[in-house]
Length: 422
Ligand SMILES: [Zn+2]
Image (cartoon, helix red, strand yellow):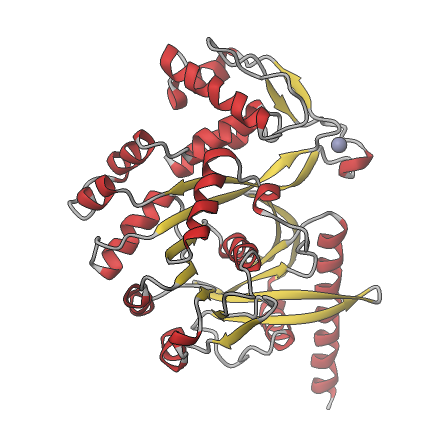
């Protein structure tokens, strides 16, 4: 009896610390929380853009109870810890209800749990607001207008891709199209049919009366079986949009081609990296340092006049597309004139952090004839990337540079994107 009461004491302690962690995230504008076993502690980390900051270390001995309470919250199977599980949860904090997506993934020392706060996904959210602009935005809009084929949405984390999928599905005209959404979690797309995929999504696709739906969203493609099934489904009258984790658009094209073993029907790919923006009210402009100029040359060949002309021309297009809050360019045809960094003091708009909301860095790859011909012949990612860029694709790193010139992100973020996206 004594034992029982002490374990229920632990449970309520853990429940209240979960509430506290989420409350803390909400009040500092954080949407993603990672809870994972460290060597001596449970690490609680908040994600801001691409950065994970440690916000708390909790006693290691509570890890099992932590997993258990979080899984209970999302109706996950608390007896299973060796397979990934997804679920949604509702939680009330300060008498306000919040919706969460909880993902548990087995790691070496137990389970890593990711909590995404999804209730405040802005209903007015659009691709433009996420940071898609210019030629990349045009390509996406044109692809959506054709109403058939396959669009893969890819990012290093799953949640940002699912947000984009939701926005894309929301743009579909439901008077002339019927939508089915197959997902690990309900994306709450208005006027759509939601099919909950249990452990294995592949099982749910055959149960779907495909002919009935002209637009199908798939919340996560995680097996080659499912990829092949989707590839078979791609017929002229249907538009399929699916989340497929990868770090670049070209990387996604290559993995997809390997999974389905067919390059005649390459998908259209939207790749996004979510990063932290600078607070637009207190950001500070400065002239690039000598070291940063070197980094610009190494990563962007800014010492090449043709390249710099191209960068400047793109920045002018970005100004036309209202990217950034000023019309004064951060580049000319010869060099990068200025960059921006966060204010260390911050201001009241950013809760004195110097940072703003998360923003997307994008890369949109169209499956051109050239790509179709060369893919599958063991070309490296870089070779294919160069072909795509030659055919007008704005790469992740170039999009990041333009956003840095426009004062939306800092240069450190650009370098981080160069490191992960090549
Ligand atoms: Zn500020």
